[in-house]
Image 1 (cartoon, rainbow, N blue to C red):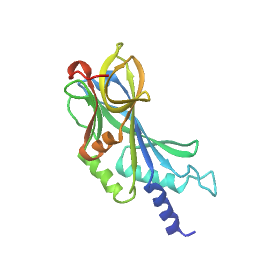
Image 2: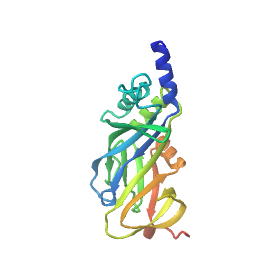
Image 3: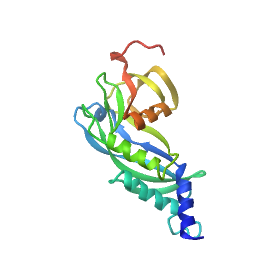
Image 4: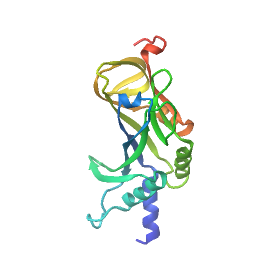
Length: 214
């Protein structure tokens, strides 16, 4: 098989790949007025971690994923590649901003004015992703799952907006975010809003919002 065909297959396999942003954040940092940098995991689906002829070598799609992620995130760090059931995933770490009163990072998770959580993306990063969707990653399937540690020693009553919270569907309803670890998975609509409009509201502080039925 010639090099052109190998490259063509690699691009085809990557064109429908799944990408998941999976940051872990402390609620105290999200609510802080001072922004800080944390490392967030980003997982990219690849056809295989190893070469089908020689398992000691990296697969062409893993090599391609490394090259492409570096073009979008200059500070990306490759961590590992592993197989989970039928899927192979390449794991990277990228820096994101957490907290702060205003947006000042390529990707930032912080409070809005009402005390709710928002996820924001810079225009610069939007453009980079758009350019790659129009070239290599033609049908990129992006998801965002935020691992939240409520380290505030008390439950936070929130109103979630089209999210999955600890595997519970929260269309628009109140929820007690108890101390400890929680997983918030954003809806496809919210992810699309971040990628095309630059931001999406994850939840609001129930005490500062209009009353909403459970």
